[in-house]
Length: 137
Image (cartoon, rainbow, N blue to C red; front, top):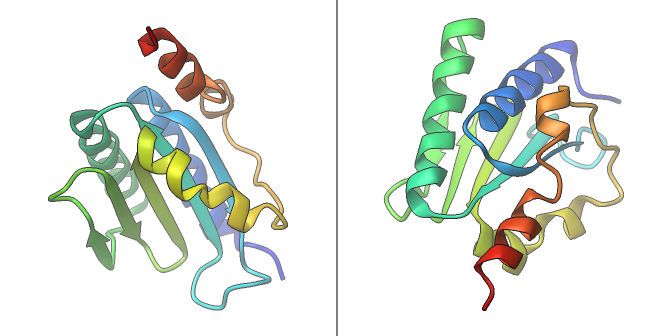
Protein backbone atom coordinates (compact mmCIF):
# COMPACT_ATOMS: atom_id res chain seq x y z
CA UNK A 1 0.00 0.00 0.00
CA UNK A 2 1.18 3.53 -0.68
CA UNK A 3 0.10 6.95 0.49
CA UNK A 4 -3.10 8.16 -1.16
CA UNK A 5 -3.15 11.02 -3.67
CA UNK A 6 -4.91 13.14 -1.02
CA UNK A 7 -2.13 12.43 1.48
CA UNK A 8 0.56 13.35 -1.04
CA UNK A 9 -1.27 16.62 -1.86
CA UNK A 10 -1.47 17.50 1.84
CA UNK A 11 2.19 16.60 2.40
CA UNK A 12 3.30 18.76 -0.52
CA UNK A 13 1.23 21.74 0.63
CA UNK A 14 2.48 21.38 4.21
CA UNK A 15 6.09 21.03 3.02
CA UNK A 16 5.82 24.15 0.88
CA UNK A 17 4.29 26.11 3.77
CA UNK A 18 7.10 24.98 6.08
CA UNK A 19 9.74 25.93 3.51
CA UNK A 20 8.09 29.33 3.02
CA UNK A 21 8.54 29.96 6.76
CA UNK A 22 12.22 28.96 6.57
CA UNK A 23 11.89 25.56 8.26
CA UNK A 24 14.99 23.37 8.18
CA UNK A 25 15.41 19.81 6.95
CA UNK A 26 11.89 19.23 5.63
CA UNK A 27 11.39 15.56 4.80
CA UNK A 28 8.38 13.27 4.36
CA UNK A 29 7.96 9.52 4.67
CA UNK A 30 5.29 7.19 3.36
CA UNK A 31 4.46 5.17 6.49
CA UNK A 32 1.30 3.55 5.08
CA UNK A 33 2.88 0.08 4.96
CA UNK A 34 3.89 0.09 8.62
CA UNK A 35 1.16 2.18 10.27
CA UNK A 36 -2.58 1.83 9.90
CA UNK A 37 -3.46 5.16 11.45
CA UNK A 38 -1.87 7.50 8.89
CA UNK A 39 -0.32 7.49 5.41
CA UNK A 40 2.59 9.89 5.77
CA UNK A 41 4.74 11.86 8.17
CA UNK A 42 6.21 15.28 7.46
CA UNK A 43 9.17 16.33 9.58
CA UNK A 44 10.43 19.90 9.79
CA UNK A 45 12.50 21.84 12.28
CA UNK A 46 13.23 25.41 13.27
CA UNK A 47 15.98 27.00 15.38
CA UNK A 48 13.74 28.54 18.06
CA UNK A 49 10.29 28.27 19.66
CA UNK A 50 8.89 31.31 17.86
CA UNK A 51 9.93 29.91 14.48
CA UNK A 52 8.39 26.51 15.34
CA UNK A 53 5.07 28.25 16.01
CA UNK A 54 5.33 30.27 12.79
CA UNK A 55 5.89 27.10 10.76
CA UNK A 56 2.96 25.37 12.47
CA UNK A 57 0.67 28.34 11.82
CA UNK A 58 1.70 28.48 8.16
CA UNK A 59 1.07 24.77 7.67
CA UNK A 60 -2.35 24.97 9.31
CA UNK A 61 -3.33 28.05 7.32
CA UNK A 62 -2.26 26.59 3.96
CA UNK A 63 -3.94 23.21 4.49
CA UNK A 64 -7.17 24.87 5.56
CA UNK A 65 -7.17 27.48 2.79
CA UNK A 66 -6.08 25.26 -0.10
CA UNK A 67 -7.47 21.87 0.94
CA UNK A 68 -10.15 22.53 3.56
CA UNK A 69 -8.19 20.37 5.99
CA UNK A 70 -8.24 20.97 9.74
CA UNK A 71 -6.12 18.99 12.17
CA UNK A 72 -8.05 16.38 14.14
CA UNK A 73 -5.53 16.91 16.92
CA UNK A 74 -2.82 19.43 17.77
CA UNK A 75 -0.30 18.76 20.52
CA UNK A 76 2.72 20.49 22.01
CA UNK A 77 1.92 24.06 21.05
CA UNK A 78 2.28 25.51 24.52
CA UNK A 79 5.91 24.45 24.86
CA UNK A 80 6.75 25.29 21.25
CA UNK A 81 9.49 22.66 21.14
CA UNK A 82 7.66 19.91 19.24
CA UNK A 83 4.25 20.49 17.75
CA UNK A 84 2.32 17.62 16.22
CA UNK A 85 -0.53 18.27 13.79
CA UNK A 86 -2.63 15.17 13.13
CA UNK A 87 -4.67 15.42 9.95
CA UNK A 88 -5.52 11.67 10.05
CA UNK A 89 -4.20 11.14 6.48
CA UNK A 90 -0.91 12.80 7.42
CA UNK A 91 0.89 13.79 10.60
CA UNK A 92 3.09 16.89 10.64
CA UNK A 93 5.91 17.11 13.20
CA UNK A 94 7.52 20.53 13.63
CA UNK A 95 10.38 20.35 16.09
CA UNK A 96 12.85 22.71 17.64
CA UNK A 97 16.24 21.83 16.10
CA UNK A 98 17.52 20.45 19.42
CA UNK A 99 14.56 18.07 19.72
CA UNK A 100 15.00 17.02 16.11
CA UNK A 101 18.56 15.91 16.82
CA UNK A 102 17.70 14.30 20.17
CA UNK A 103 14.67 12.29 19.04
CA UNK A 104 15.99 11.55 15.53
CA UNK A 105 12.65 10.51 14.03
CA UNK A 106 14.37 9.89 10.71
CA UNK A 107 16.13 6.97 12.33
CA UNK A 108 12.76 5.40 13.20
CA UNK A 109 11.32 5.77 9.70
CA UNK A 110 14.47 5.27 7.59
CA UNK A 111 13.10 2.03 6.12
CA UNK A 112 9.99 3.78 4.82
CA UNK A 113 10.02 5.35 1.35
CA UNK A 114 10.76 9.04 1.28
CA UNK A 115 8.15 11.13 -0.52
CA UNK A 116 9.18 13.56 -3.23
CA UNK A 117 8.63 17.15 -2.10
CA UNK A 118 8.52 20.56 -3.81
CA UNK A 119 11.93 22.02 -4.72
CA UNK A 120 11.71 24.71 -2.02
CA UNK A 121 11.25 22.01 0.62
CA UNK A 122 14.12 19.93 -0.75
CA UNK A 123 16.35 23.03 -0.57
CA UNK A 124 15.90 23.10 3.23
CA UNK A 125 18.01 19.96 3.68
CA UNK A 126 21.11 20.61 5.73
CA UNK A 127 19.95 24.08 6.78
CA UNK A 128 19.70 22.99 10.42
CA UNK A 129 23.32 21.83 10.40
CA UNK A 130 24.41 25.10 8.77
CA UNK A 131 22.55 27.14 11.38
CA UNK A 132 24.08 25.07 14.18
CA UNK A 133 27.58 25.56 12.78
CA UNK A 134 27.04 29.32 12.59
CA UNK A 135 25.96 29.38 16.26
CA UNK A 136 28.99 27.37 17.42
CA UNK A 137 31.86 29.32 19.04
